[in-house]
Image (cartoon, rainbow, N blue to C red; front, side):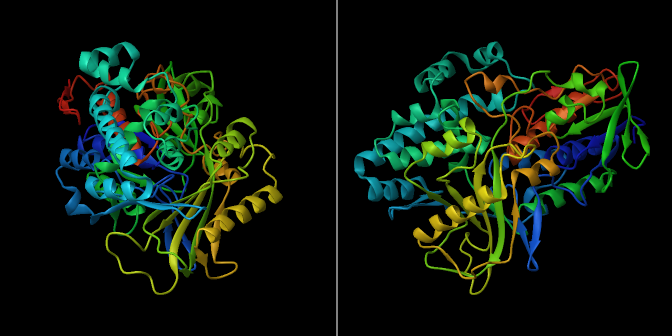
Length: 511
């Protein structure tokens, strides 16, 4: 084992991936985490004796984890049981319309034709073709890049790629671009929801986010044991390679000596010496000086616009009335008001969209005969560090949200089902300095993709991972940020004197 000591602050997905890669390379790795276990936002709550995934619920871009586990000498199938979902998502509208999108494109085409007509189905095919071309164009020069820039992206995509970008109108919003594809307002609404995957408004997010359609068409899976099983798996693999995990060990300060990282001070009073530190948390915590003044230089001084927060309900109760699939979205007709309320008025939406993850369904599982596990979510403003969301407003949002479910036919049998509610204030306490923002900064405007900090920082020996840094939020993106942080650390001057080349997921090597 190398004598180079690394402390990873935060056991979210980015920190777990980084710790696994560094431990596999023989470094002395210690992970400190304030919570009682791994996962970060990938958390699991126990409700009425049932463990419920209460953070990210969708497993996509499995190639990220295939490549990661191959790089540490194992396979995804050897470590986890994952199941492809034939239904990507089931969508409901309060006027009675229902539409399934399938992993099989032909089935989706037929479903759209039945839902909105043959002409709209052909437009759907054209949309999918453009989303695929966009994804293939941006995967390597943007998603796999260490620190993309507009100039570097232009070179990386080449003339053909520039043509693909020009064809979607990169300066247009996602909402405007979707208007060029669909005449049925419901389909425009459905695919506009991809902006919320990055915590953003469809009216402000760039048209490039349509590539998320291809991400889902490439496959959506469920994991036996829930998404939290992924976090536990990564922790176990890192431990097997020598990493040490210390839970209930909150970081109070990142110490510097002569401008370089020297260690981490815990709230217990203990100090852990470190030659390098990887901060796997929201950059806002550094910007606000919550980990010491010296670390503030690691992120841009100017705070970016906050992404969406949420109100969630983790529920264990019987349901009846309609047949849910694993992923379900319930829409209202007035979609624009949701984002006007959140981003312009800073209040809970008066007409929220409701997402329901039915965790005992999908992948041909039998219909639950008794209580089932549900995560219900509505978007909310990231104002958890203020007092603007009153208890009355939260109760009204809950009433409105569950009324929509009932109008669409979903009955949750108990009048007050066993549930845990999480608000923006709760998320702010879990992730300090964020206001409850769950995706880092909002992806608003076409330059937003280049404004996230990368893994390397101006502070010598300090590296960044997590959803607030490049390439962005979401489980696979956070994993990629952890890979980039490990690669940047291994390529740093303090290590290059002894370190062998490290294979990256992009097929190159770092000397």
